Image (cartoon, rainbow, N blue to C red):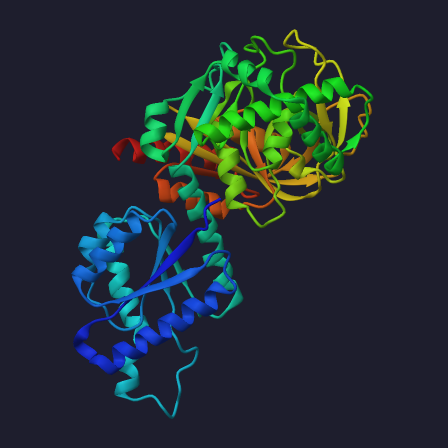
Length: 487
């Protein structure tokens, strides 16, 4: 991960004289330093902008700085908004308008016209807000006192979403082979996705992977086995199968890193020259932050990597997921999420076990995989779909639970959850919106953050909550369809 930072650009003007401007600059630097100590990423004070040129210059610099993930603006004094037009019109990074003020209280004895001229963020931020609305620029507005924890948390959440945008703009996905045949939802317009989200999605032949696998040394495999032993329990004596998974992982990682790819996909229908479908190999790569998508699903692989980056420094729990089957007992309705092999161990409640079992699909040798139960807690599941002409991001609130059944003969990682507003209504809403069977499940990233991410990238966002009904969702989707077609 890059060492991302955010730039603090403060608005003022020459009208108030040099002493006021010096005070504004000193306070802005102080605020940036103190906020950096509590925010997830540094806030760097850049300039007290007083002219059109200063604003245009700092925006141009931000646009081309690889480490700048976004700008946060605030107007300490009145800052005439016409001088922001050229800069904001060319802004290509996420923007947060922070409506705050340096002082928490109005000082009864000290307040006079000098104080009013210096401390008029209430005035300046409204002028600044107008030009954002007039330019129709995507922006996050956060209002409140800058030293309050809830305000800092909101800014921090926005920062993580903005980092998700930065990661998206540099996303490269390596597809080992093509998609699973005849599957619709894993398809999509890669040109549109690169235009909109920045993703570079390309294919590498499975035969190329096999060549790299053949060149992996026994010493490299020994080293990775030591890592496996430190992280996971071995519930198998079939070390040769585990070693083969290590060979696959080492080869895939070499290819991913050589091409600068942060996500990958494969399919059991395209395993030319390989003895096993990568199971443990894919799971351990995801544990290191790479995104994955089964059956060639490149969209979910990229989203997994992005959401892992957004949730960095949380509990690391974002994972490729699939709704597999339901428990439909009245009053005990649950979804069971799993996959054939590839669920990230970041969502495990306890130390995962390496096991070897038949796969029953794909016609290859029995693969090693990690088996575990998912941790309980509030989470979301997210699906990015191409509905023809635009992208739609669907997000559903869920509550993960300890599986209510031991399922001793199910040799895969699994997570069980209750969906909002209920299992059946949630399924009806998900299907109505066109949500895929592959998702990213995250305990770290919130629906609000995913909404911010979608807004920054100008794509449709659909949120299924405890208050959603099929009727209201159908109505909202109808209006949204009209609005997006007009855009």
